[in-house]
Length: 193
Image (spheres, rainbow, N blue to C red):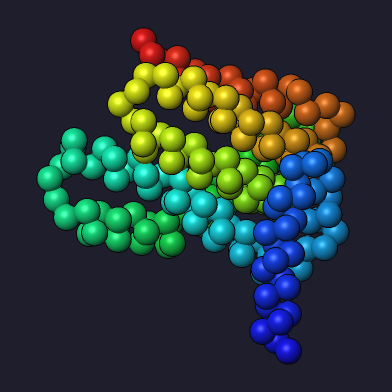
C-alpha cells in the first residue's frame, strides 16, 4: 500500500512540474495550497540542489581536462558532496537574502512563501536547466552557445519572476523579470567582451 502511494506521489511531483508550464503563477498557488510545511520545503531544496548539480555537471566534465589533469571520478564525487551537503544551505541563504530584498521593495510574501516560490521555480525550471547544462557541456568551445544560453536563461528568469511575483502579490511580474534579465545578460555580455 505504501509503495503505491509513494509511486503515485512521485508521479504527481513530476506531473506537477510538467503541468506548471501551462501557468507558472497558478502552479505556485497550487503548491502553496497543497504544501506540507517545512518538510516539503526541505524536499524541494534538495531536489533543487540535485537539479543544479546535474545542470552544471556536463560543463564541469567538459572543461576539467583543460584546467587540471586528475581523476574525474574524484572530481565528480567532490562536486556531488558539495551539492548534497552545502548547496541546500546555500539555497536557503539565497532565499533569505531574496526575502529581505523583496521586503525593501514592499513585497508581501512571508519567508515561507518566498522559499517555496524560489525552490519550486528551480524545480519547475529543472528541465531547462539540465538541457542548458547539456548544451554548454557538449558545445563548450562554441561561441554561438552563448546566445542559446541567453534564451534558455531568460526562460528560467521568466519562471522565477512569475512565481516570486505571485508569492509577493506584486501587481506585475515584468519589473522583476527585467531585473532578473539584466542580471542574466550582464555576465554574458562581459564574457563576450
